[in-house]
Image 1: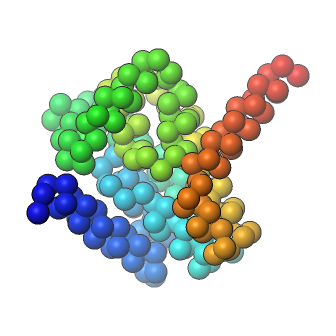
Image 2: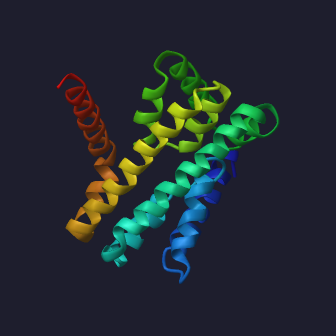
Length: 201
């Protein structure tokens, strides 16, 4: 089997294992752990647990989204530290082991040109958030701006998914999987537009 085939098989098994954690009696703690690690080293996004957990307990949707947000942001600091202090010894190994070299180089160039916008836009999409956090550390991006952008983008994504599932239930699940990037982009445009309006009122 080729290296790409083995990587796909491992990721599939990791995904199934992560999905299985959603039904565990300590699912909320497991979600926090996965969300934290995904921001720096783990390949499976916390959405794999977030979606079935909210569908199973819509009454706890906001708590689930909050845990996912807080731990993802904290994990982002770990990813930032890997890029800032340990890229040559650890960060590069993570990027290369997942085959993200080309995407990582692209992020580095985008950070030079767009800065905070890279975090806001990429953090709302299903791309591996670890690429954003490690690249931010390598770029020595302003830590306060990184923190605020991470809170906005991670919170926006997870609370938006939780809200859609809470109010529309299983019927919205396919829509989220297929069109979440577009929904998140619309959310970002509305968010930025709101700040612009407030700025000029």
